[in-house]
Amino acid sequence: MKKTKIICSIGPASSKYETFKQMVLNGMNVARINFSHATEEEIKNTLNLVKKVNEELNKHIAILYDTKGPDFRTGKTKNGSINLENGKTIKIVKDDILGTEEAFTVNYKNALDSIEIGNTILLEDGLMKLEVIDKDKKSLTCKIVEGGILKDRKGVAVPGVNLNLDFISEADRKDIIYACRNDGDFIALSFVSCPEDVLAVREILKEENREDMQLISKIESEAAIKNLDAIIKVSDGIMVARGDLGVEVPMDKLPIYQKQIIEKCRTVGRTCIVATEMLASMYTSARPTRAEISDVANAVLDGTDAVMLSGETTVGTHPADAVKYMAEACTSAEEYYDYQNQKSYARKDRIPSAIAQNVIDTDKLLNPKLIVVATATGYTAKLIGTLKPKSYILAACHTEKIARSLALNYGVYPEIVKPYNNVEELVKNCKIKAQEFMDLKPGDLIIIVGGFPVTNKLKSTNFLKVETI
Image (cartoon, rainbow, N blue to C red; front, side, top):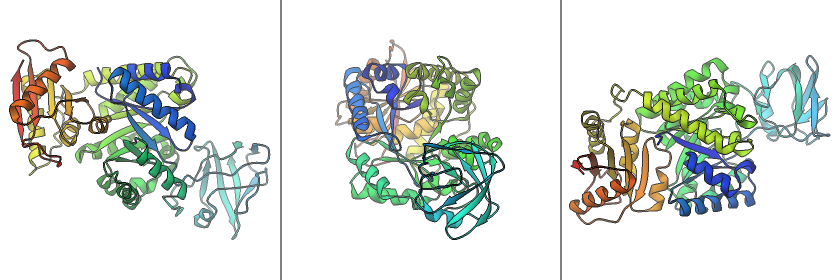
């Protein structure tokens, strides 16, 4: 049983129930719905898949919605694509035109005002490269440095340039509200560049009475890297979105940024996700490459909480197998992880943090079979998960909503328990659930963590108890 969580993007390849169910059995924890691609019918189908599999398998698969964000893209072309030839010139214009070999348009017209002569423009994740050689009020003239076939609505990136795009479009606002009203547990925010972007979305959650929904900020630009500490502070989690980030920053810096982002998240107790091209060969291949397996394992060894599959499970030919290979890579890396000598990230002067650190120390000294956390809000289970004990964490929750809120936390497995009225009942209920969760034998030790009196307030954890089965 792995500790690292797996997010799977849902698309045509994973839209049938039997495939979806097998992905869950192979290790999927969270279903990702990408607003950039999914139709309303496809979204409803995914919601039904999650509901059905949770009921049938008694699971707590959560739902992560992913926003479009201020996604800078090319417009449509006359024949579905145009050929960009090295050395030739092409214009990018503000007028709404169908693109040709002479000119094409973009969706954010005013963004052209921020681009200057000498800037580099990258198309379709950096596959094509333009250099701006002239500019007027209505267009940019570009030299084609690296050409290719440019199809409709491909991504545009201008490294090092703030394009001043509105973070929340009207379409994104509608999508965020839809997520609030349709079982969303997490929202991944695309192209976050500053903390104000995240806070603006929190205002929408407040209006919808969904402040419990967790916001995952996707780090995809140089601006986000510069504002990383401030973004982490106002987010519930961070996604290392290596696709767009790898276009915006030098590719050789990407592994360093990945390690730094994970470390910063662990320092302040935020969930971290590593995403993009983790098993990209499985778009078509039945097996991943050795390098891809190493990539997944190294993300786990870096300390990530979760890893993500994108096209591998939306359009790939072997979606369930992709989950299986990823889960196996995670499990092997977790067995090698140095739990004994890892750095402490506990925060001073806070009772729950002190107890969480004591759980880690007790786990190292006694090697218990299980850590059981009685949690009304999920806070303490998340906190202990961030500190990465060697033992599995069973989060004893009262509601399905809290159980699903823990779907991205390392080593945390939520289960629903009966409410309790005193410490004795709490311990009794936790021991019963622990024995249902794991094959415990007489004499096995478990750690029980909780708070009493029971409240729905954050950070009310105040005791730790070691129990013998």
